[in-house]
Image (tube, rainbow, N blue to C red; front, side):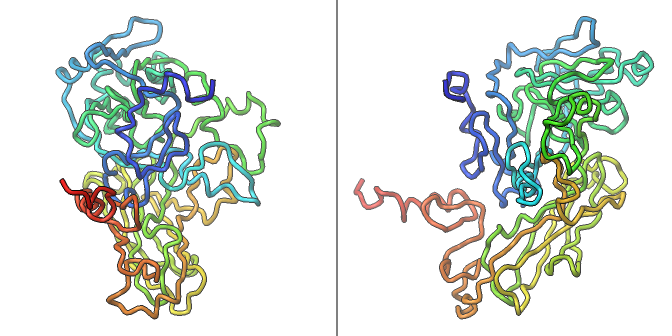
Length: 447
């Protein structure tokens, strides 16, 4: 039978998935949001990136039970109602990033193709997650910091679909590490795509460690087996290794899996290929993020390919996510206004690089960090615009948001795009009214 064609896919939560998402695979659903969504501090509803390995589980909340305990011993069982009743709910703003974010930029004739989905800069998103402290639940079952003295070093997390990974147990037990069992996303019931009815939030770690549809958490003495822990999935090999054929399995399994995102950034406004004109002032925007709770402290922007730099303004997701606080779990959003050089022609390239509170910075290009799995491309963020000199002949009043002749009078800004034309709108309601009176094939019919 053709992949994805059988009955296991009939219950996918299609209504949760925004039409503007770019899907790299439909079954399972792996998709990233457009740049306009990445300009928001909290990623808009339906536009948080998706990374799935299987069909989305169908769960009856009333029958659902979550288990937790030590390996080899009886696990304690909780219903979702019991967790909500017995433990205080708190909120946490966290950015998740897939290790393959910006993987597509690795794939060049010089370095070769990587393994995995060709993500652009959108396999990263931010949400406010609500639930209870994992540390408090562990404390209830008698697990505290001294458990490591007994030889237990790991928490092994299992999803209902049998995805499983391990994290060091001290991550969940140390003060202010904020590991959470979440049942809400942005103030609403956890969507099915994002782990309904319960998921684990491991802030500061790569998205793959925040297991969805959590089934059980087992305190173990050793990390688990499997491709997502000991296998190749999250291992960064050297840039000279272009094939796995010559790489021993034992060598791969001896390497640690990737846990923390290195400092990274991206330009999310304007979109690649946006027409600009010489002398035009252009509003730039983007995100920057560092894993392990490190705070971004500076964004450097260059409009001349890195010859000179200036600093962008930026905002944090939460006032508590301050520098050297070790709890900066979310990205920052940055803005900068730049002038297109008067002598610009052909293309105009803007680059950015971020600096965290340990002064880690991004490498200029991908050649030194290339790896066959295509993980952690944290080279300078960039966008290349198209210089359109003809637009200089258009009066200021007639210019559209992108300054091009073909889009004169067309609104290019706004997060809601008409499906039948190039026009954009600031609200869904405005877009719907435009479509009704301009494009609806039944608009001329009488009631």
